[in-house]
Length: 590
Image (cartoon, rainbow, N blue to C red):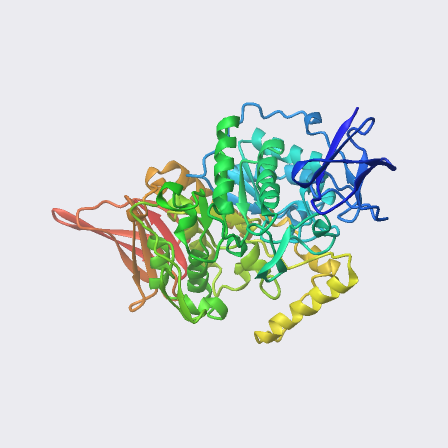
């Protein structure tokens, strides 16, 4: 079987492909491309490229398979060999869905796609609609977060490689679960990155925290943009992903008339129409700019959704009392109220943390609430803490975990859980790496310690390169059987079930959510969505709240504490009700 090899190397005067140990000359093509067709180099053949007669054989920038790590040769992979069984799968809309963020390497003890398949029924029973995988593009070593990926077209081999990823997606679809992939286009990892050998993939015209920026708007950028847009389509087409989460798009610098994000959106819309499947793009950005999800006709980028960090910060600070770092701008219940009703707390207002105004208002009358992802925990907010503590280790009362879950899962936004959150996992989730370059490994470890020392952290900082740091972060699947964890798991199931069965809780209008707070007589909040009310006591003393106007007949739907009591007084021709909430508790009533 013959294989066509092609590579973009516009500055090279000669390019050879080495396939199965034999070197073959490549022919120059227009626009800096080189091509060669080699017989007997089918699926499973190792190959690489040699530029201008050099001794080093470089892996393919579009390598589909890196079985020997980021520094090894590429391997031919035939996507048509896999027998998919999801022909009847047409996707799942983002609106109304509950997402679950998963890191494959720490989701199970085995840390593989196949092992993760064995736990998918747990997610189905929980009520999850879509699984979001942290990046799986090939990165250095065996374990890591995946945000230092090097080969963007090749699934990480220790997870199970291309076939393992396809088995996972196929199995998820068989259970009615959509699958979203986290992808990183704002930088490429340093360890094993040889893209600059081939062409102008990077530019010094823009500075980034990682060095030279990916070249999206300078000379030679047309092919770099095509590299990324075609990578987007590759994941959707060949691996049947239902959507992509775009990491830190604020760090993508592109001054072109048509921004890269808009170009991606157009390509995905065309692919969705071609495949007959719902496909979507979700952005992460710290700019608080609703233009990301504003239609292109209205001057936006037209993406389907974006993460809402302000909601996380407001809810986290209200529950934990933390005020360090960016939490200094949050903490009051008024701040949480604004996040629940207007999405961004910083919508052009002053940010003490930044020392300037930040953000832009959301048009709450025109923008659907499902376009914003809400979360109480995620990989960043847990893993970027010095010791990787989950929120359960930070709360003054364990009852506040149920309060946080209710405010998240019954909020107007698209909710997302971080793996293990549903049972209050006690395992931390630390920052861990497995860089093979000794200097880089040492720099990462030293830099981590210096970073937290600058912020006044006095305790030990786990070494990212230590295997134990990784192992401590693996979920303990015995915990859901423990009575305390099982109770919290059942609470999450009940909340998700209520959300799914109640039309008001899926109302897309931001204006349909009304919130009242009280920080004078107590510390409580009520969130009304249609006829459903969530009443939360975040304080340390009991609270009594009005449960209905005169003449109302409230019905308790869910209660986090058996001591919660709904009391009704008969006043002749009218009736009033009051809800007695113990400290750190929440109730849902109609």
